[in-house]
Image 1 (tube, each protein chain N blue to C red):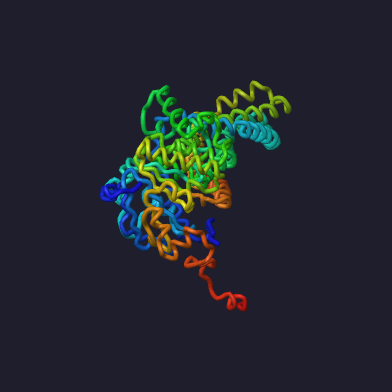
Image 2: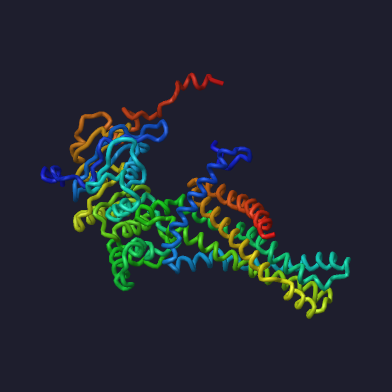
Length: 272
Length: 255
């Protein structure tokens, strides 16, 4: 868990006062997130607060209007394609739906990044892929096609693919969404063991309070385009902010209103 | 609702689109050389675009040839020169009908398959996933399909021509009793290498146009079911119009 020494270390991913908007919609107005090496950092928040957008900013897929995002000390927005790709080889991303390549088998999916970036003899590659599949408990599925997998299995295969290049940082986009409790537990254990045994710095985007509380070292709660709270899960639970309390307890109404902002109901009904 | 298609009179949007296709072409061409280092990917795509279109190309070729045989015989018989049927059909097929009809069929069969495949890969995050794995989807997905289409088109057109001439022969020689010797010798002596060259160049140009439109529409399709459907439709419509325009330009250039 987090300790003072860890907090003082140079962050691996450093999001500094990022502003980002799509058209007139303001997604972020001054978000800062620091991810210490070897930690599990969770980004939480209600749906539509731009959690996934934050991951896309970190991966350099989109560029913020102002503010900086440093990954391994490099400003992501200023990198050319070649250096951005070099950076992405050190960072794995687990997509919400797995995003497996449907035209190839599970084995080939996991082998894909290695085949693209390294020249390994076939027997070595086979061992490597089987090892990663073993790590997620799906060695048996090696010859299956992605269409033959369940949602939970797809995500585990995608996880095997995300770790096959031994990344230093892994980003998880909603890893628990749509999974049954057993699969959730499996993914939870995998995230934790990857972090502990391989020392992979992990950034989790999620709104599963219970799961996050079990593993995160540090949690950032996003709402309304800013970080409304940060700290360990325990600190967040005992925070006296109404927004934080509403989110952590899952109350349907509160500072985050049940109704999205809309014109007056009575007025709208009378309009023709 | 946003209208994704082009209004016929919206010249500005048209120019912008042409520019964006040209930029995409430059990007694809830049990735063609690296893509050549993956022969397996290319073979797969030549198989997809070429071998899988074979049956429809051969069937259409046969019937176009047979129709040419009937119509040509009727026409030539008026001038008492039925024996020139082989020449008329072969020249018509090799220089004009072969490349154009093959390209139209190719756009319908292979072009739509390419556009919808790439479009769906985009809609299911597969292209983004590749980018996140530091693999350029233009190199891995687009370039091999583009090259595959360009390689397959002239080959398909050649097969279309052969089957077409065989179809004409079926009608002319077997059905209408033109002597086989006359049919083949006249055809052989009248068809020049220049005619074949014209056909090959046309089919190559059509191959580039069809493949480019298909991969462009697929790559930039909206990531929704409706978007992929629209991209597929636009692929066929744009390809067909462009093939006929290009055909006129090329024919004029060859005269």
